[in-house]
Length: 264
Image 1: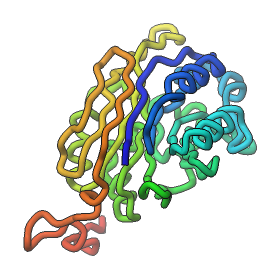
Image 2: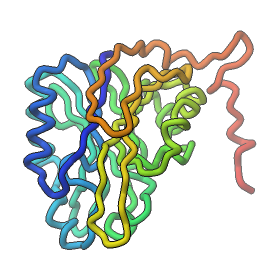
Image 3: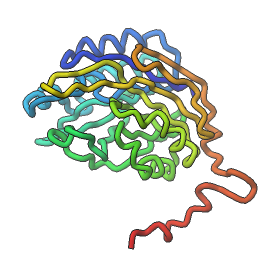
């Protein structure tokens, strides 16, 4: 699989500009899977429910999903991207998967971070793995990474590569993802954003960039800079994600003892 990410700085609220920027950058890209950041088309720092309502979209009939589905179809490429979703009277921090056949599916963020809790409902989809023509793609979003159960669940469901749209402001994730990948023997593609948002007085969010692709043996295949736009694509070997053995006597999944992990 040729897998990659596009790290850039969205302009808050300028959905059409942000999407056009992505379409322009990806139009000549040769890849099987591209991961875009969390809230890549809207920006992140919402300051009112009305603002959230205005920028959220229905899925799959919304503008963002339709544009990415068109790009996926024309390029024969799978795309995972984060966007705010409207569903009835609820808002979700969601990610979609599009592919050559168009819209494929949605994951809603399980673990909300910071003031996301003011506007969004915790996800109700559960962790999902999509069986595609290029491999088994699992999805988690940003802060999900800090809970080891997130990637473990995706790995147990058969994910070979975990797409990880993010808007990271804490410094920990880049150094933690190699451990997550090693303990589950899967690839991960973390697509973060760059730049700053200070739309709320006294609260500035500095996004840390450093998007990366990590392999099942914990090695970092490629890592973006902290403050620069970056498009990276790497060849990854999915067979490595299907081998859970560490040696002749230990297999990460066979050796699990779920009965011993109960909190009783």
